[in-house]
Length: 356
Length: 113
Image 1 (spheres, rainbow over the protein chains, first blue to last red):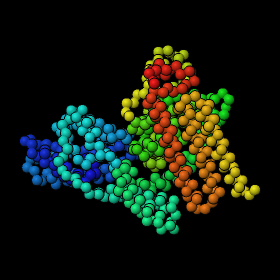
Image 2: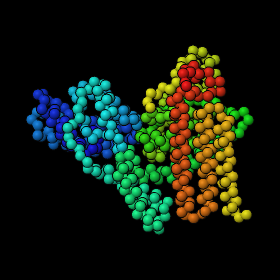
Image 3: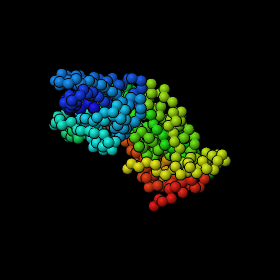
Image 4: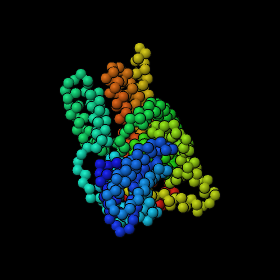
């Protein structure tokens, strides 16, 4: 399920499909959420959606003859991921666990506000040999409430930016700005935001950004003094290494913020991201220390999830760091321990990711 | 020389220094990954100081706002560009330079073009 305009009709269709069978059946209403929520906060919206869907389903059971029971499940609340495929994998596991007969998909299903991912989902389901069907309900085009909110925010930001550059006293800029803002809002309403922003969390994040930005600027300044020292030092004291880090941040925006703050701060550079898995190049072991202890991760978690975000231990403590190319210092240490171990580590190096 | 001029000169000098460090870094560092460090960090701060100097020189609210926006865009696009370059390099199997002479990666990444 996802908060889509065709949710009600899809739920009705599912209940009806179970009701038409000979024996009694159960409808499972399943919602996947990325577990970036600390504690239970933030899950309220998802729980509310489940309750709404349950309401639709109960209503629908009254019209069918056989008895149909309803169960609701929230999946993924204790995991971190940002790739849509993770959502589908959760669903596949759930189907296997409960030995379900078939999956009925909402035609307007999407894991977040931006992308309709029905095709990917169908691929995953058919690869896992699960019977599925897309509920034959019409969606049509009507702007939903969340779409209007996202479009409105984009229009305001675009207009403010346009007028800031064009000058607020210039009438021509005001008119063309309004037209531009409207076009931007219509085109980007499903592109610019991953989730529809809500006033409370958005304001809290903006407030925390006031603390985060000076911190980031200070880190950048420090990074540069260190970097200047390294580059201008006659012997060029560098010892690069490459690590795969599983970041404990849960959606595109926070992964981007994390990746970019890694790139801007002391001696670390994000090379690649797959979901929330980052490939980070470090210039020296000291820079790597900061990374694996989660200094930047904590800052980004603070920015998006508030004070509770600070409590999580760093990637090293969570065992979320996987060295790809070790610094020479560590390699020579390992060599004296055992030759063969170094061999396997070296073989594990080449591009392990297959996406592109 | 007024204090304002001195501040502007200071910021321009800092900007020039860090941009110079970036240039030296790009020349001295051994491979594409380490050079990207030079192109993102030092360059970003150098450009930042230059823009702050410009903002102070013009001093009006409109110019400060525009300078601020420029800063924001540089701080978003610079790491993104570095990310794109190194990601392309990585997907072309370009080896990571290490101080022990690149032996550890040469065997496995040997089929690079």
